[in-house]
Image (cartoon, rainbow, N blue to C red):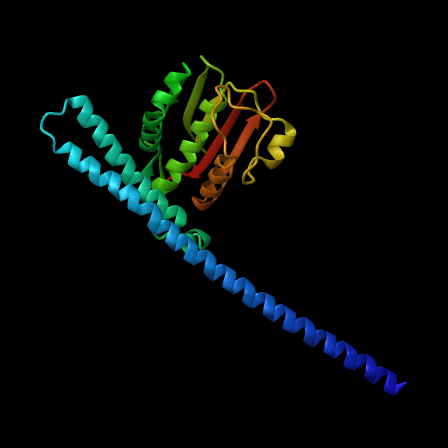
Length: 257
């Protein structure tokens, strides 16, 4: 009996040692993959910044022309401004360590209405093309703590989706309210709404929902996953109200400063 028990113990010990070796090997493989991923992101970051900086530089050269009209100067300044914003956005998106650590060291006090006005300005033409009215209801200053790029990304994706899925001639309502120590920004569209099945998977990456863009626009299925990610990084809450054929309202709640 003793001999048999020793054989069983030895077999178990060998099995555990083999499993430990496999786990150690797998762990090393994961570390190597993680290092490769970070190297790839660094390369991608460099390759993306180069053309963005070129655009910004060319915009600066164009602006030096003394024969430009006010409209042309305004367009060039807009190109330069968007290039700078895109550069900052690339930096934030590709800064994996900062995102994964949920760092708040760079957070600043931000006025929600200022960010919303910038987003609305960028999507004004897109809305006009579909005869969609953009209505902003915001009174006074509503300030929160965060990064403007994060907020811009959240509002930009929500407005883009609202325009994309709203029928021609509809209205999109953006409302800023304060309640129980939180500022909340709501985006309400007159689109097809979300089915129960869509609501279960809409925040996953690369999800194509049953609702389709109303003017043949392209959808990557990333917008809402980005909204959820950045709202979380800002320490906020994301809520929604929707039903088929009754439109959709997304609500971003952020702690008031």
